[in-house]
Length: 241
Image (cartoon, rainbow, N blue to C red):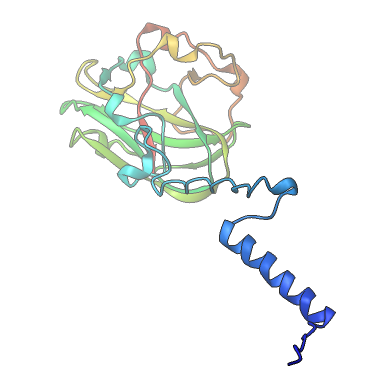
């Protein structure tokens, strides 16, 4: 009996060898290493960031209270400040506010803490100046609103405007006669210390001019003064909507 020897063609042998090699790689989960040292595992992917953006505490923002900006958290405006008509009547009182994003400014919120029912007020206004001292908009006479409802209240500007990020100054002008400790405003409680590290024209809290019956179209911020501030006229709380 003859034994038949079947020869595997060279091409087929090569294909079988490649298939065996690929099967070994697939089973080990890696690539073959020289000297048969085994497969190297790839590094695990980093965990996805949490949807909440982290667990750290972040303080209140104006948007949390349907406002656009403020001079400080109203929860910290626990102090009440007052001044005589002789002390601030006719003066322009400025509080600096720095905007981090563009907003449309329609109202200035003021914290009215107390009213004087016997006061005789006239030509009282709020306004907004830019960093160059130009009046951007102002309210009408707010004397009636200062006679009622001792709460935080929005006072509309005569002309809303769009404000780019930057530095602005909210201006308060009071005129008339009132009892010093009756007409009062919510404030941060900071008077002298609020301007720490600052000089004109960038004071955070200051006064300008005297004998004003309306807010002037321009002011010279280099003339900011702290003489009245230093007598206890603490920085008023304001917000924007």
